[in-house]
Length: 413
Image (cartoon, rainbow, N blue to C red; front, side):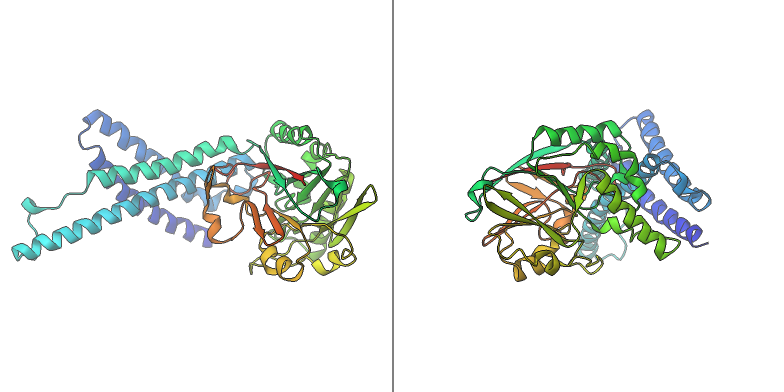
């Protein structure tokens, strides 16, 4: 009953938005021929009607039984239509405000309470076109983003540390994060990403959490793909917030615990070493560095704090250089910098750069920056560095707009 009510509320909201946007469409196409108007207006209402029919049918269909790809695309199309029209409405509201002010001024000047037809203030063709153009561009971006979800970008980052032991100068580390195997639907494309990692010939591969969306079963079809990852110093991983199954309704606590146990085991089968609030030590020519890995720890209220950095850190005091793997970048400001100033490099993920934004040389922007201070790339405070990987996979929206999937290659000096 709740789903039925919610669906019809959404239908009414969308119908109002559609009617409002249609007013702009009529203004924008006022000079067009009757034939063009019929085609454009017809397409507009056919697409709108299809969206509303989907919402009307939603309470009666088993949406979860749909194939993952179809389910994702259907939701994105619906959300994309809503957002693009909502943005168009913002421009129309500005135009209506302008018309109201202009109407008030004219009415006051003529000392009339109601303006007559001769003095009616028409809707701005420019603002109508601008609103439609911006809304249409947003929808086009969402559609284009479907083609980018496997467009892996190899980013080379050189990092200098005065306290790095000379034996480890030139150490090459590849970081990937946020695999989200439950979202994949193209095994070949995912394998191409793995090949791109191996082509870098890294000394060490680090995976900073969110291997799955909710269930270990999501990783099974890609187990053999990720088992190809190897490096002379090994492949190490930590857990992210999605790996615990916290976003799924389980039949019992025991079933949830078993799911996590399976995720731990499957990583072991792939040849990965999962660090659960612990550390390992690497040695070269008699010199040593430490790699620490913690479970998920988020400073934001809705994310769990499973990580125990004190446990992972214990015993590493004597090592001159330390790398920390912690999935959520908010951990850096909240605890790492304030309590562990000798952790030199922290590697995180989690944000995905929201999979939407603008990134050009010298400038980057994403809505996620209003939630996370550190959300993509390199950040430095005093002698400590944090790198936030933009994510290997995707979740929710099956695409990437502006913020592309990332394979990070660090060279330490």
